[in-house]
Length: 254
Image (cartoon, rainbow, N blue to C red; front, side):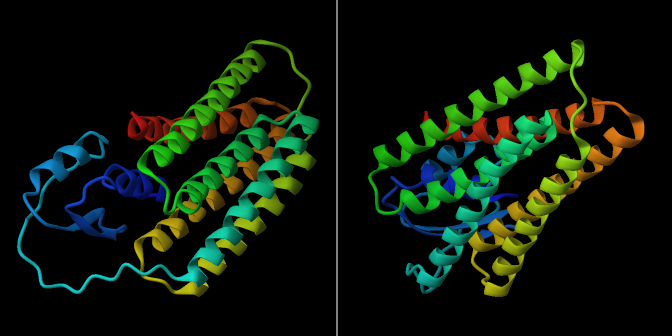
């Protein structure tokens, strides 16, 4: 696993397995410990359908004491991160349209994708399997629709004559988004949680910092090269990231 969307996909895939007692994620090592009763084959078969290069390392009996309680402090922290991401989705989308920047628009959709991942984890807690799958399906189709629209617009701008994006707006808004993501990363690290979903959230937010930096660089290149191509290229890259996440969510909801 390299982001919270993958962890959430796994949790939702195994949520209807009564035999699964607990999941222990090791994000950096891309490993998952599944505490369960019965044979491991049904669990392994279910995980294989997610196409995450699943392999069974070992299986053995365990006397580990399992903890299922969820910290209220962590929930509050994830709510804070979700709200920050959603607010900047709106701001980047608005200024992306006004400044004619596909980079900002694409980055706004990445922020929306982050918000959806956190919302899936928070809103669906305690809900029925059908409800969780419906939420995942809606989120997946919505993200992929936005990504397709974005790709079409990028292609249209590549082959057409469009006004140059406002590089100043690109840089200013991206810097603000970068500050917001650095703040989120600081809050997540300050929590010092070793739990997988918190570690995954930090990785996801770190990726957002990289994307924000990419849009800032694209804005500088737009000014230096007097070309809209850097803006279109960074927009296309981010749309690929959004579409990839949407595809995995839709695979889960089938």
